[in-house]
Image (cartoon, rainbow, N blue to C red):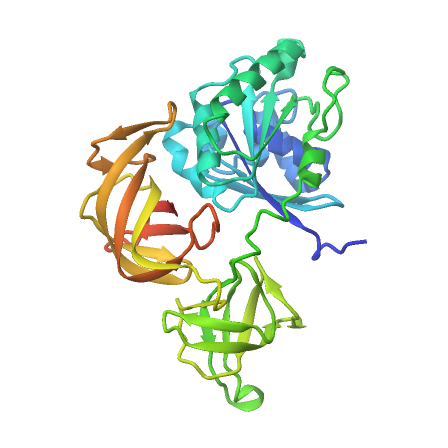
Length: 420
């Protein structure tokens, strides 16, 4: 039997309009899989009783901020963890409000899968389209559309089928490789963990079974070897006096001892001597393992450099064309703006050369002629960096194809971008 440490992990994000039941769904998943501690359950019961509710409000499990509990909405990204015998899970419960689009971008940026909730009474609305667009923009390979509150439409098959067709019609303009539709009642638990007795017409799986079995092994890029150096471990006194290693996380491909590698930006070539972890040496390293590599030759390597294969190298350049989501409430992105750009482990100064257009997320129309991007707006932007970056397109590698922009003066993250 697979040990807990060796179990595969699935990261997924939940999204939907206000009151679609995102927090209730996550609470139901954790409650029915028995991953709520007794003191948590007691706290939920006490809070629900204080609010005059007859049943335990499972949404309170993820609505962690006091402001969220008082308003009954989700404001921040709430991360929760649970496990079943088949898989470990990290959940990012993201807000449904339009003004918190940036939070969904944050929550979905590291996810393998998105769960988009639709209220069966309302059908596909603007927020549904917005969340589907962001899932497509962030290249999520798997989207599960949960049509919730089926109990309030008399478990109607025709209502379910109508919403499925509406969503597919909009999603046909997006790039979502795998879509799955599940009719559920998060409040009552139907088709969440256990099959529903009220919807015999639905022949698919429950949400939990789909999350446990969806194949994510091919989501990461195992073709293009990329190893951004995060830290140089220099020679120390004593037992490790001659040890010089390079620590970081593998962001693509596979590395093995004996492989020829090229160091960017210097272009020097060498060979991997060994790959180390806390548990000993490895025969190979791949995404998302964090390792320390030692090399056959002594080469001047520092943080921000990248190890790649000689015949498989990333793009190298200073001009970037990317889709950008603006995060800042206090400032706007404007042409000629200057920022610190962080890409993998490398920080460089960057200048905004051009704002090509803003995307109307609800209609997918391109709004041209704009001179700025404001909070939560998404647009196509061209930047120039002070020194070259080593990058792939976001479509090919989410790690080496993504950047964030940092304000030079406040040191706050003001935008996240995906390289085209």
